[in-house]
Amino acid sequence: MKRANCTGVREFIFQGFSNFQEYQLTLFVVFLALYILTLAGNVIIVTIIRIDHHLHTPMYFFLSVLSTSETFYSLVIIPRMLASLVGLSQTISLEGCGTQLFFFLGFAITNCLLLAVMGYDRYVAICNPLRYSIVMNWRVCVILASSVCATGFFLSLVQAVSIFRLPFCHSLIEHFFCDVRPVLNLACAVPVINDILTLVISLLAITAPATFLFISYVLIISTILKIASAEGRKKTFATCASHLTVVVIHYGCASIAYFKPKSENTRDQDQLISVTYTVITPLLNPVVYSLRNKEVQDALRKVLGRKSLS
Image (cartoon, rainbow, N blue to C red):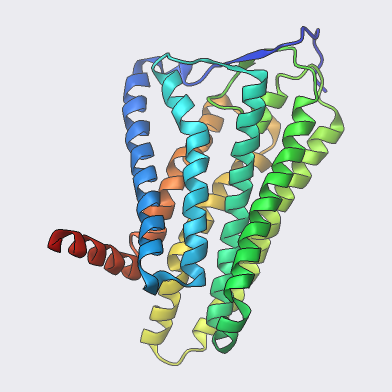
């Protein structure tokens, strides 16, 4: 437990990427380009899925929800990070920090749970294809998506309230946004209950859905291996290969960030991991999961073809 003289801090200062002063302009250009690509990719996905009726299936419904969530997730973090890189905004109010943490965690947990729901969708489609249209009807899809969002923001609210009820004695956040550990490090004292709560929420948001996904993919792969033809196995696995790629990277980064022992934390390592799951991972959704998907590519060509004809 950390102790210091409490001075009632009401404003925080981001240390940001001060260790890379000479590269800040380069980082700004790179992150801005990735941010624009992320926004453009996710907006294209949502638009294409909405326009093309061939993509009005549960899998693409969940993909459009994930793309929307990833877009807002990026909006919570990256604009302020870009501003700090060019020296426009290095400070944030206590209330602003709490708001950023709430929305960051809310969308982050929602994304983790959505990936688990998408894994369940693939499990039903591959392992129980005859019952797919019954099990994954539109009512069930809407309930699952709504439940995931509600759960994500409920857990986020619990975490944010538990942190910002603490008195803060330090104002320098050794990070480029308000994340759980950097903010907790500023508290005058961190009760054991906060550490326990953070662990429980991490288990619910990361370990539980990751375990569910692992079991789902064991069953999916065992079903695929029973398919007689090699072409059939390849075609079936292709429907979930992109999702599996995003899952491995997404949960891998989240696990390293939130389960790594405190004693092993270094600021540069934490920032590298954070850049991966705040800047790189949101870009994976449109690039890996969708824009490499033949159905999405065909739908995009149709839309572009219509525009060129008109």
